[in-house]
Amino acid sequence: MLVSPLLELAGFYDEPFFITTEASVEISLENRDEILRGRIDTLVIQEQFWVLVVESKSSISFEAAIPQALTYMMSNPNAEKPVYSMVTDGSLFMFIKIMKQEQLQYDFSDNFSLLLIHQNKLYDVLRVLKRISKVIAV
Image (cartoon, rainbow, N blue to C red; front, side, top):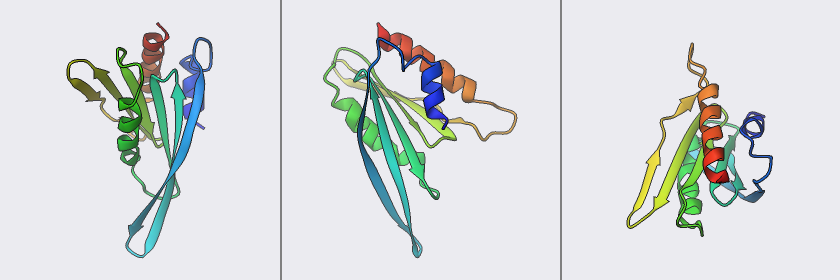
């Protein structure tokens, strides 16, 4: 409910972008006597920006999607361009950037939380998304 409007406001549903989806991954974690289940849904934009959304009925960390995001990003066929991803569970957001040069370089953003009192980080998330859309549209 939150990711799609953000992507629309950042211009990812307009040309020159095209969107595809990857197969969802299901996560099952055993915690005490219960099994926690969740899904990681992936949206791919221009083969340069991956959006991984963690959907869970209980407390599966959004960080569970980071290895999957890194795998997609490192297999990107456009090695000359930086690759980005956003990992979110709807309340926490993190961005990842990978550049393939002589050595692989990567960086993680700070976590943007929508749950912090007196700090609306949603505008910061939108600002980052708009910047990424400008960079990959070139």
